[in-house]
Image (cartoon, rainbow, N blue to C red):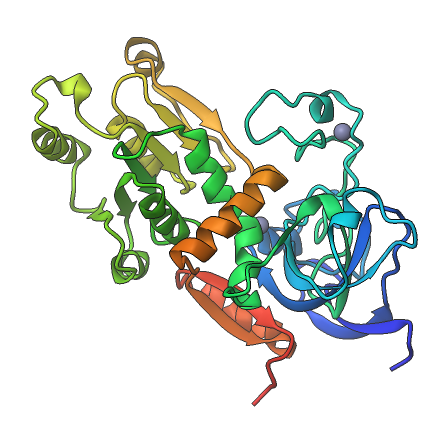
Length: 372
Ligand SMILES: [Zn+2]
Ligand SMILES: [Zn+2]
């Protein structure tokens, strides 16, 4: 192949499969940029939404390269790298969150460093940044240019295929647990515990010392959640009523007053009202209900509970780069791994089919894997 070309899995229209094409190899144009040679790239729920036209105005053009769950090796830096890019060396393995690419560092979001998770001076919700895999090309390719302010090192004992999903699913659920601001020994409920984010949440919550209730409502995800061997109490929401569960937890905690029974925080990963209600009702008075999922029709919230029980509903998205590295260190120390389905790069369409079957865990293409 020509020196300035590379192979990429592209989408050329909405609702059409990925196609392998030779496209121009991206080049570094800015002091903050680093060029990665891909080792692995994850397929996320958002990629599926984009392929069916639900993320307009993204992608800005066709053909487009998806994937913001990127793991690769740094192969080039700018000739005069910024202080952020100088932190890295050629050959280092990193993950990239896919966002934010080129945060401005000057807007009200970037300048507000007082909120946890937004403390880097370049915000993950900067309105001027762009997003790998979304508003610019992503990781389903041999090479991708990312921003040095959006990467974290992959510890030596972590494989690229395990690291890639952590850059989106991992940091999202880790950030949600951090937002719940619990102390070790407190209780957290993860609603949607057997999914791509949920199963990682069960493992993180163990490592963070929380007592966890993992809730799901389908056989596959429940099996996956139970198979992880975490300390979490896995609950089938189809057969367990919130009130029964609250009573049981209250008894275990030696509480006799209803308002004191339940969990200290709930993390909502599902998009249905029933699941939201399960978590919302299970939270003790004054507890946070951390919402990660974005249900298209939104959620109906009981103002009575908001007012009389002082339940706080808070949203969360990703986390700071500092938090990303902290998560990677926790992963390495506690041997936390996502459950993955891994296929060769060439078999991305088959991977999407597997994802659409509703099997739990995360879905990743590996560049070095050969087709059988
Ligand atoms: Zn994602
Ligand atoms: Zn900004």
